[in-house]
Amino acid sequence: MNPTVGIAVILTVLQAAHCQMIKDLSACLLGQSLRVDCRYENKTSNPLTYEFSITKDNRKHVIHSTISVSENVYRSRANVTMHKNLVCLYLQSFTTSDEGVYMCELKATNDYTGNQIKNITVIKDKLEKCAGFSLLVQNTSWLLLLLLSLPLLQAMDFVSL
Image (cartoon, rainbow, N blue to C red; front, side, top):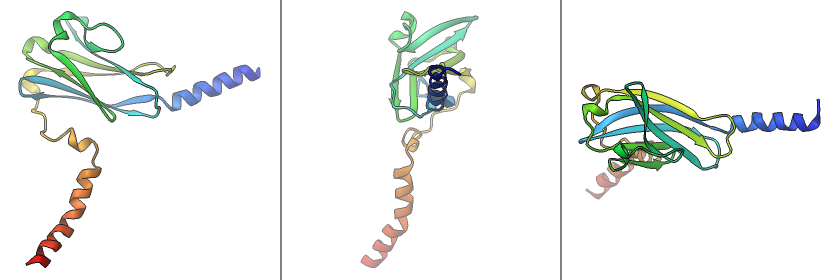
């Protein structure tokens, strides 16, 4: 085998091992807004691009994207926030006309393994309300620290009596 080809194959395999992977896609109602959470595992420090779209009437409509251009219908109602390993779409004034199959597509810059795509069917009457602290639980270290410190706090309260 040509050494150049061998190196190219090794680099491709290594790149595949370091790509992002969508772990979970969920949707919930936050007041009158739809929230779509796209959780992923990213094993590279390369910048991440995303696209949220909806398929309805057998047609794809881009809601919010850094990959392509968003449609005018959604531009004023949609925004996206990015947290550690989570990209959240917020669609304001969510109605039954916004029901359909929502797609989250992620791609890390210089990742030659292709885009990661996950779909979820969203029907307004079947959505649950978003948990009040679900974004805070993403990084559970503070929660674990709090739970572990409760006995200590109780002991200190007992000593002060």
